[in-house]
Image (cartoon, rainbow, N blue to C red; front, top):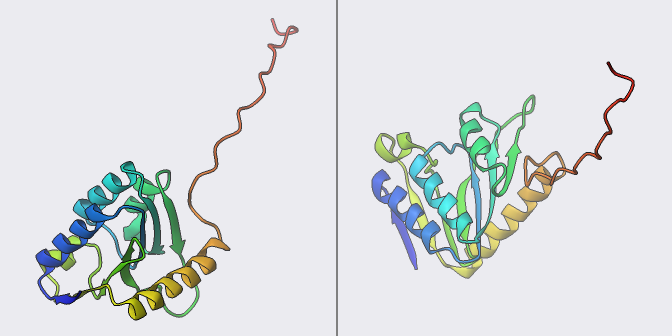
Length: 166
């Protein structure tokens, strides 16, 4: 399969459909993510047991998604503050078998207002390049400080009441 979509509503629908079809893994690297409908589909996938990894740019607009998913899946922020350039990717890999990529950010503005493109492919050569790039990006951001998965808190030992208190 190799297709391209230029309509924002159709692009959003295709992303949601691909997320709903995921069985094992979803890997997303995206500059901006504020679309609640895509987020809802992603949360449903997590609840089905799909392993999700998100790499987002350090833009403030991503704060809601980071807060929503930080305790549910692996979330990483590629914050290049003080450096030239941004992590400006917009791609998603489903089950290491399908890639969705293009100019489409996961935002309502992309869906309703912008001129965007979304390419969907299962071409194995392209797929392998995206998998390699995602893994390299993940290596870079994991070494900085992942936001999640959050470590399981260690219970504090019980402290006996102070018998000298009045």
